[in-house]
Image (cartoon, rainbow, N blue to C red; front, side, top):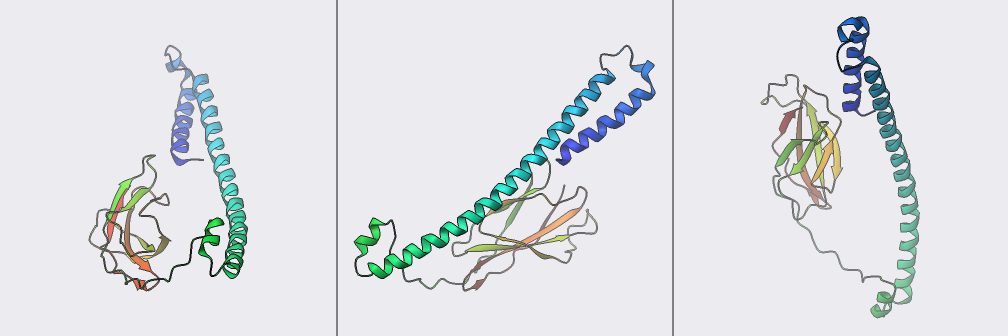
Length: 205
């Protein structure tokens, strides 16, 4: 269940317990204990629906990824055979929607020192991490993450370890806890090497 729903549900449960303990105080108010219970039931149902939808989506992604790998393998077989048949007839390759292979050019090693922008996610859970500028020769970006000891301390850099590698310049990190300072740094990668690490940046949710 999403944390923001669970938080509200926990608050309502505590309030409901108070109303049950002091029914006379609430008898003349427009807020009824039965209404609170009804809303708690609806909230629990909504949270379960979200959880079930996330499970279904995850299963569909796994299935789709598996089917895509099979399809890519078949497509590569067709491409290789087509190249063998029509090696000297590029116009024939075009009939199959196959582009001629290009000789890869030498790509320089990334040299740009990247900068990171951190914002709170729109749902109040996690951070949106964005590169201020893309590296023109990068294939992917390697991110490291660390957890500070004192949320007020922005100068002491904690040990940082591999977090993720992605070609995207923006993504959401939902794996954070409130009241803890998290540090991030990033560098650009391509097939010929890696660039310098960025300056670490941090944020507390």
